[in-house]
Length: 460
Ligand SMILES: [Zn+2]
Image (cartoon, rainbow, N blue to C red; front, side, top):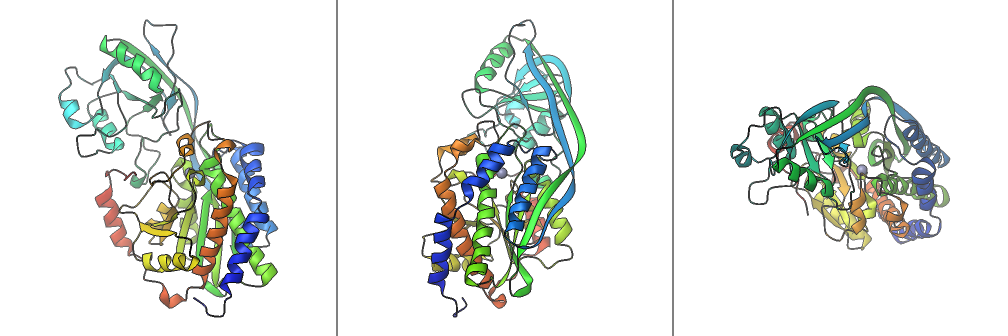
């Protein structure tokens, strides 16, 4: 730590301004109220990226820009599930991300969790039929990833699979059938259609009687433009940076308050605090702090993939990257690294803040967020504790749905996040270059991905 810094005064400025000068409620109102749904490639997403850019520009950061990238996107125009001969009833329906169009009328087979022993034991062939599958893990066996179970069903000739949402009360959620570690979110192993907990019961009863189901999905696939908004707060070390990121896009039906209006609001607020420190107190970061808001996280991380490709072939890699996502799930508890090398360094900086924050290392590379494309490049990437960890709020349960609205977000907690993150990033910006451990080797990372592919994400 640089000895000439007056850390007590810096911390007092950052926490004080985080509390009394906060713009978090305004950012949330614009993103989740005025703009609303921000499915990448639409006008709503463009407005959100423009708003983020205008806010970064208002802080007189350097190189503020809205960078475009080509997005592979899809829309579901219509979908229905009907039981043949039971004409007055329709099941709740939500096709998975990138679900192709389907037009199927076939008998249903309940395949349980779709585990190999269950498929072996079926007394009817799956060929040409609709599988009813439970997407959670079968509790008595080695967990098997859903993508692999869907491939097993496809190999046996199933035409599509229907599953239930994990939430009661007819709450449907945006879901993905592919494993993002495979690097191709658009490849769906088998069309997967979600219905509600309530309606899957009805379908199972009809399946037991040998009834057929008629499933229609009308999807449209297109190429669109999406946007990443970025700006730098320059530091004294010209070639060195750390990155704070969030994603501003949402699922197609969501106002995205927790996921991820909360993360974007905290990103903008952390930028405001650090820019304010530089301007009001003339205390500047040691290395550049880059703030970036990605598009298309919900569509297979296409924004962060484009950003990494555009910037980190030529430019020096950042020392550290932190992704903010779903910050309404609980107050800030610490940082979760993708690689162990930086653990001691990060924990030392957290300890110097004296707030009881912890640094952990996840035993798997996590492909479910924007830290993943950075990690693949060998950039030390991390995220904040989310639903995998204890101490979460109930409000974590509403993500990827139309229920993810502003009432799920606690502005006071987000103020605290911004103050603590500003203190942490400012400290990290001043850790001398020679104190940073070597980043992980990209060949080893590729091998790790290969070993972990198909493995089940840890949950907690
Ligand atoms: Zn998210």
